[in-house]
Image (cartoon, rainbow, N blue to C red; front, side):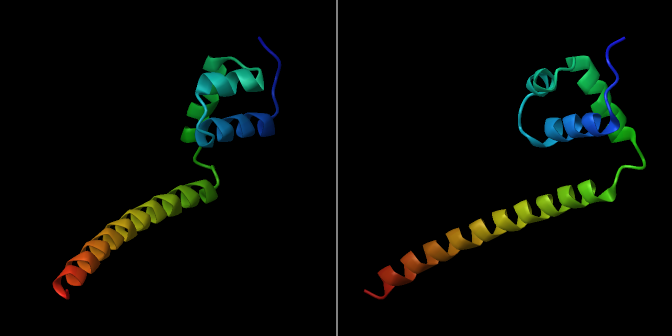
Length: 91
């Protein structure tokens, strides 16, 4: 059996694996743990009912902001087209 890692160490590795955009293999290598060990920590973290709600709140807020951003981009595109239409019409 390998060395025991502290709870904080495992939590940080899981956080980096889920939020950094790096592959799990890369994160495992960076933290000096095995790929299967990191995967197990991630599975345990996802099943943990005592996980702070803050992370899920952040994920929910991020999804809402992405949706709002997409809507604003669509509206801006429509306004650009309308501006061109009315500018040509007024000539």
